[in-house]
Structures are given as structure tokens and as C-alpha cells.
Image (cartoon, rainbow, N blue to C red; front, top):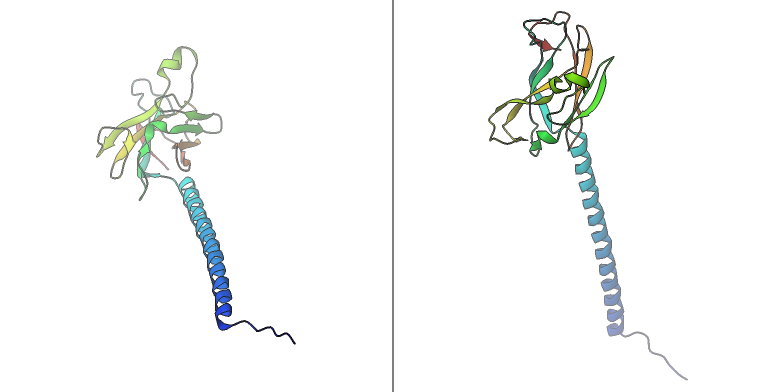
Length: 196
């Protein structure tokens, strides 16, 4: 009669240790994949928040200027307002921002820094209203809008910015969401007007 002995305690311990090691390696791989996925999800959320939120804000009022003192015309020449960074944002290169303008009769998109917001052909092209930095507060001499700095921006508007006309100026930074400014030209235009 032949007899086969059962597992000894040592053999059982070896098999148990092998199962534990395999399970540990497998769980480490699963946890590593989970951490990697979580990190990618976090990066995606941060990128989404960054692109959906604006990196700057309007500080104070938006002004509409009519500077034709000798030959008064009933429309605005340009708008002026102050911008500053929102909390926790990276510096913004204002020269890489584009501007668009629209009202009921005029629509123009994509004026780069120093270009006319509305292109005018012919003899008026050189005197067309442009946009740029009018003045700075706490500036260090460059075109980067940094924390604690403020830039006063002027934007030329077309002659269709007449009394009671509602218009939209959209600031389009290279990074982040577009920032629309919706205002209405007042019924009576002075040299300096607060636009609401």
C-alpha cells in the first residue's frame, strides 16, 4: 500500500507566502495606476479651471471719452478702464491680448495690441482708433501685468457708439477665458462719461 503524505507546514507556509507576495505586487500595481489616474484627473481639473476663469478683472468704472472739443460729434471716441490680476494668477502679457468690439451695426474681432479695433480703409486708416496701455500704476517698466500692478487700457471705438447704443468689448487674453465688457452709451454724451 502506497501512502502520500500531505503538505507539511513548511510547504504550506511557502505557498501562502507566494500568494501574499503576488497579491502585494498586484495591489501595488493597481494602487499605482489609481494614483496616476487621480493625478491626471487633478491636472485636467486645474487646466479646466484655469481656462474657464479670467486671469484679470476690471478695477473701478469703465469710462467713455469724447475728446472732440472743437467739433463736437455725438459719439464716443474711445473707452478707458483699469485692469488688475485676480488673486493667485500668473503675470499676463497685455501685448498678447486681442480685443473685439460689437454693437448692433458693427462687429469686429481680433484687434492685436496697438492695432485699430475697427479697421478703416483709405485716408482714415492712419488715424483709426487703436487700443493699448494708457498709463500704469505700480508698474516695473514692462508690459507684463503682475500682482499689485494696474494697467489703464484705452480702446478706440467706432462712430456707431452713439447715444443709447449698447456695445460689447471683449478682452481675449492668450491664456484664460475671454472677458466681456457690456456697456451702454449714455443719452447725453459729455467729454468724460461713466458707462453702465
